Image (tube, rainbow, N blue to C red):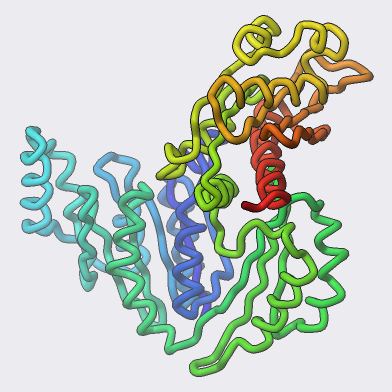
Amino acid sequence: MKAEIIAVGSELLTPDHIDTNSLFLTRGLEASGFEVHLKTIVGDSAPDMEAVFRAALGRSQVIISSGGLGPTEDDITRTVVARVLGRPIRTDPDIVAAIRERFASRGYAMPRINERQAEVIEGAEILDNPRGTAPGLWLEAGDSVLALLPGPPREIEPMFESRVLPRLEALGGGRRVAERSFHVVGLTESDVDARVAPVYTRYQPKVSTTILSAPGHISLRTWQWLAPGQGAAELEDLAGQIHGILGDAVFTTTREPLEQVVGGLLRESGRTIAVAESCTAGLLGWRLTRMPGSSAYFRGGVLCYANEAKVDLCGVPGAVLETHGAVSAETAEALAAGVRARFASTIGVSVTGIAGPDGGSEEKPVGLVYVGLADGTRTRHARRILPGDRELVRERAAFMALAALRRFLLDDPP
């Protein structure tokens, strides 16, 4: 059962916008028994869109499109699909009234151009949009079905889950994909593959496995397509072996971000944390505090780029900076101890490094990062040379600090 996703919008062909909807849609399609075999991004060009939709109808049982349902002249998805299907379009007065009421509820008069969003292709079922003005459309065409959905994630996600997913589950006939995922820290992509390849290759082709590198960690996903009523014994057996091999290098099997995992460890142990950040400039504190309930364990933080700030705000001895420099194990540990004392937290964490593009040397190259940790009993540091440009080094440094903190917590459980 093949499915296809078409993302409509010329902005998605620029370097400034990314199609994230297809990731969300793929998960729902797989859970419903449809294998996504093609994803296409097409600009707001009628000939290009027409070619893409015609081809999709000839090769896929399910086609999900996102975007192009707005009120402006370049929102032409409905028009193009109607032409491809050879069906007329009508304006639905009930939709016009609903859009007008939505505008009025916010104190605005509906622009006439928004009537375009009330256009319905003959034979389509209307999919309500509780978070926007563009309804979706569900169409059947021969052996294929099409769902035309809006582009904004906040609109497409509830519409897909409430109006499209139940239809797909009925069409899928009980076939489904079962999966297990492992997110790993402290090992490289090649390290992970070398350890688990002798195991997962024995289960192919019944069970598929992929290993991908992400900023700061490695993702391993293994999955199996199951017929109605079929169990996932092979998948479960493989997943158990993989977890046993990788051990506590796996920080989650349920896709929680690392900061959520660390926050859980802090909350369970009753410990608190304060951070001193140089090269990350608040990224570490942001990641920790974006988790709900983080006020239970996050005490505060200091952004200390200048050496004077390291001395004045975190009590780093001037002699340490003069002897070892701002980017050093000694300074990282002193920062961690100092910020811990300043905020009276259980643990202090620091990040100092050279994000670039300038400031590196042969001894201390761009990308060199130190993380310091201190809890009054233990003082530790981690050192890495992180690849990438300035922003990527900073992002990876924040993740490195979280990974070091997790290890620090695991090594001294309550």
